[in-house]
Length: 489
Image (cartoon, rainbow, N blue to C red; front, top):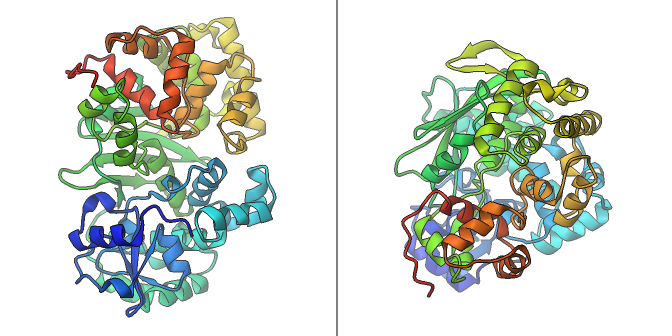
C-alpha cells in the first residue's frame, strides 16, 4: 500500500498529537484491533504494536475498528490527496456521492471510461483497498456521524448513509464497533433540533478569503454569504431544500445545517458541500510547494489556508462561467440574478431572501436569453450547454483527466480554453487546471513585479504543478490589494 509518510514519522506525529497530521494517516493498534486519528487522546501505544494507514477505509478493510474516542468519521477527508492519479480521485468523488450505494464497480468504471479490472488495479496500486471497501467504510463512518450528531431515527440513518437494508446496516455497525446502532446512539450526546453535521477540514482554513471571493459572485435569490456563513437553495430529484454552512471559532470544521426532506440524499448533499468549500485540500502541503516558488512566496505567506471555492452544481457553474465571458464580475452576477428571476423555479417556502432555485437544464435548453442582456452567441452557448446536460446529467463525471475535460468542453459552442479551464477548476475540482490566458493572472503577476506574456506565464506555471488551480487563486486574490512583503527571495 502507498503511504504518504514513513512509519517513524507517523509515530513521532502520533506522540505529539500534532493536529496538522489529522487526516493524513491513521494508526491501527494490533493489540486492541482499533484504529485512531493522530490526535487521539488515548495513551500512545508502543511503536511495535502500531500499523499505519493512509485512509480510514484501508484501516477498516484490514479488520480494525474505528476508535470511539477520537472518532475517525470526523477526520478531515484527505483521501483524494494521497494520490495524483486523476482517475482515482474522480472515482473517489463519485463514491463519496453514493455511486456504489445503488450501482456496482462495473458501472462506476464505465462512467470513468475504463474497465472494472483496471479500476480495481488502480485502487490497489494507489490506495491499497478496493472501490467496494472504500464505499463500505464511507457508509459506516457517515452512519456513525449521523448517529452521534443528529436525532434522526436509526432507520433513516441507514438510508441516508447508503445502506440498502436495515439488516445490513445493523450487521455492519455491530461488526465494526462491536455495538449495535442503538447502543451507539445511547452513548451519543445529542440535542440539536435539526440535522447539523460537522464537516472537518485540515487547518488552516481561510474563511475570510472564501467570503471575499464568493461575495461578488453570489446569485441573488439563490445564495447568500457573509462573515458568519453561507446558505443557498437546492434541488435534487425534484425535491427542494436549504443548506447552510458556518465557520466555528477555534474549530477545525464547518457546521452544516441541512433542511431537506429526502434523507437518502443526505450523503450526496454533504459531499457536494465538501467539494464546494474544498474541505479535502491539504493546504499545508499545497502552501509548502507553492511557497517555495519566488513568484508566489509573498502571496502564500499572506493567505494561509487558501482554498479553491467549488460549486454546488456543475451545470450552474458552467452557466455562470459563460455569463462572465468578456464582462465584469459585477455584470455577470447581475445577469445571473435576472436569469434566476426569469427562468428559475420559485421556492415553495421562501426563506429570508432565498426565493428561487437556479434554472434546470430543461428550462434553459431553448430559452431566449438575449432579454437579460446576453449576446445572441452567449445565449446560444448556454442553450447548447443545457441541451447537453439535459441529455447527459452526468456529463461532468465522464472525463478521464484534465486534458480530456478541456478537449470535450471546448467542442461545445461558445466554450474556449479559458472557460474550460475555469470550469475544470471549480466544477470538476481539477487541482492543476489553469486558465493561462486570464488577464487577471497576468495583471497580478505584473503587480508582483513580473511582467509576463501568456507563453511566459505558461512556462512559469510549470513549477506550480500539480497545484496550479491554487496558484491561480493566490494570484486572483492578489488583485484585491493584499499587504505583501515584496522581497523576491
